[in-house]
Length: 545
Image 1 (cartoon, rainbow, N blue to C red):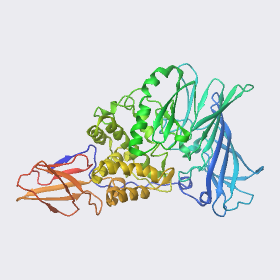
Image 2: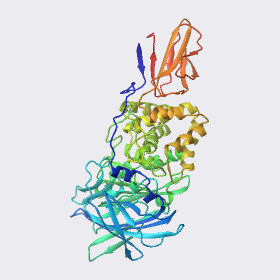
Image 3: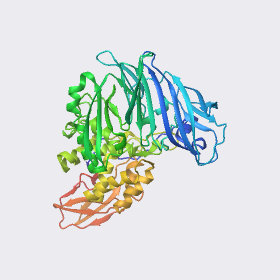
Image 4: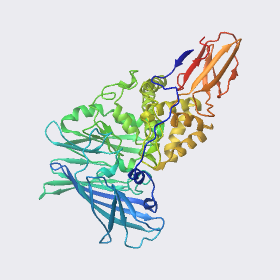
């Protein structure tokens, strides 16, 4: 046999994933428990004092919520070594029971269905120090080149409860946004999400408190603090919904480099508004903030640490050359404003919704500025990074992500679906429609799958099953014998029937293989056959011709 693969590092054999044991804490963290489901989060006011010398945080989180059903104990998370010191409602301290890093609060007063209530959580401690941010996150405590403190939070995987108490499950976001008040030494500045409302000076303590307001719902891990010797410059982007304030905060000695490199930010807005629709947070503005780690998608406060260079730390992840035409962190992390911050997964098992679309957004940026084939070449080039180790979708209700293939494989899955849709404008309308239909919502994989299938007018369920829930790459098998050509899909899920474009003797056509051999019309006994390389599949001439 001859094997012609349009991929690298592809595993073509199905194999099982070793079972993993989950703890009670995993279930408490990952499940919409009875202690979470009875109340709807409406607002946070997070106030925190940061002591760089002691690496210590202390403060309060004033939380508002609406009662949906008969009240039970309220579940909140705060991870050690942080401590929930007390919880107060209506002037009364409430009883709190601790189970791992979940806290169960007994509400003593009447909780009427449909009414909004408020309680205040007091907390303090030395939060987990980030080991390898943003992947193994926490709080990063560094010094800049001038010896000033340079501090930032990053907590996507671990969760926001690594440094402040909250309802730490992705399904529920504060409907009315939040206030973030951060007290820092007077020579430093804090930059957080939303817009700066005011700065209070405390001469006695020699501190300043920066108050930031977020108008829109916000995911917990997207809340951030960035503390340093920042300078500020800004721009205004003329977008689909009017004037968008674009604010940039960088270390003082990087100002000149930032003014040049951050030109990629408005370029990103222009490309992504074309593909995805209006930036989702005009009320909260857009910020790009220098951080002491690579960067992350904190809502309206995107962090940046890519060294003021193009590519991913100067490297082209696609090995095509196109990846060095833009600053990876600016483009990728800003893409998350649409996919992660606007449209947010309900369960972390569905993180592909964040990462697959945002990985794919890189190629759309390339396509917008350098042409369609450039974008296609970029996304195909990323296939070398695919592992095909475990399914992209993780385990539900235990806070378990799937494979990191949610990036490159997920992006190539979407690129493949675009070929099936077979209309660039319809595909663009699907991407824009997702952001309009699910505007500021939390969603499941089923929501996204069903929407794309409905808008495409094609049942794509088996395509999603193949790429999201299986590790195998489908193989198009064919042979030509006695003037006949036959094709079938192998190495695939049951019922896989993805249509695909092939070229026979220079003429492109669609075929619709199944798992059973079926005939394709050919005009001669020795046809030249090519499969469209934009489909992420393997190909085998089973006769080796």
